[in-house]
Length: 467
Image 1 (spheres, rainbow, N blue to C red):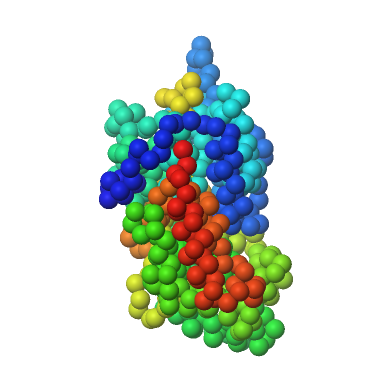
Image 2 (cartoon, one colour):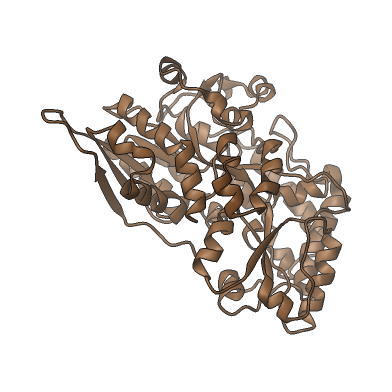
């Protein structure tokens, strides 16, 4: 957690540590919102898999259980990396078997299933979490489920300078580090473009210096040709997935304490941001109808009726891998005005070592393997996942040469802005409250939607902290 935030959040507010079923279900209830961050169309991993190193004679074997979700960039890549023996893990841990256990596609299944695992007394050794506004800290550390890694890493002389400061801050609480990053990236920093379909329609290619007005004009030209020019896609309709978009307009969801919703502090800008998204669907017909929710991956890749869509970095490797016959290009997301500073927010997927692990030393070694440079580079170049918060991975020529767009995202990552704080750690509930899908569906005007979101968001922030 950022240093200025540590002083603003009073630990006494959080009450006794416990792991009640009721508390876990309250957290898990936000899974439907977090599912917006699940990458649609991504293949899944097998439900469970193991890989064993070559054990020296007489060496007792140790099994390390890694618990995560089935997505290709999580359980899928770890399974594949074990099979390929990325970074010679077997030789480094010859007596260790790594077993991947998956619990559904996203948090709506993962969190309730993990609660059953905790309640049964059979947790694994490493657990995954997608941080949302520091919610992983209340889930893992303040419930006493994961270990403080600070002393163990110091004893290993493990260099935390391998990671960006923003990442280490985001995974720390009270000066203690509880998680290491597996994926670290700016939220939806690119637009994927079907170059062949766009050129076939007689359209010019978007460029990094485009504004939102440029994109709207381009999208309307596509609409006149019977195509959809653009869809928000991965950037969603809530304050997390659309945070760089909102910040680009000058809108911040909460104040630094994480206790006051601030959408209406810049109300005019917020209404303009919502109006733009609504107009793309309803007025300009540049985006597909949102009711029912469009299958934008198929519209883009198979039907080729959608020319461009917002995307997570994982799309850079995955879309060309899935749609091998397409000429796909990527540009940075637009700005409001030409030359504006490009805004961002740090998205991560992290793993921690459980306090229940009977083999914490071996578990920590597996964790540092997961967070290693080679796991990041190979995961990106093989099209499985986004990169890590390691500058050495972001600078690796194997990534930069394979996908030049990473050269431009790299500068954004070097100054990436932190996730905003939800002070009572009800991050998933906050995301649910900030959903403006009703405006895109034409059910409510953008101005009224802005006021409604402010009210709903503040109602969440006024609730007692989770404990």
